[in-house]
Length: 113
Image 1: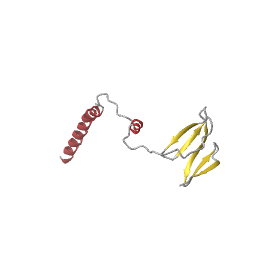
Image 2: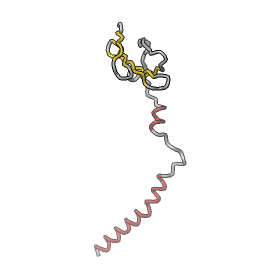
Image 3: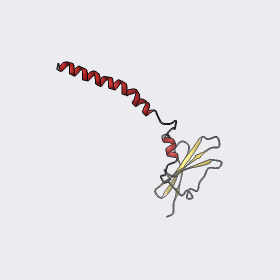
Image 4: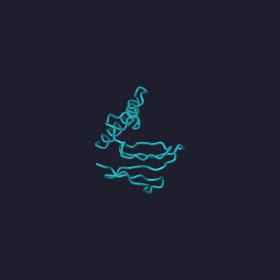
């Protein structure tokens, strides 16, 4: 008798699970066609403050190069007109160090504080 009650309750629970699974899946898919933004879209519209830096102290700029500022890293990148990298400059302590396209130091600009 106990075994039959146990089997009946197991079959009943299994039947409820089989019936409820499609209902729950349909409820999760019901988002009215609105697509949620991905992490890249959320990062573009972030309310976090942007990093600011003063690049007026960087005196040397290679002739004809495009300059890309990276305020979060406190450096500027130099790129040729065709887009290939031509070096970068980065502030280190009380000097600005300029690197060529191979990563070698091209010259150092001391800062007067």
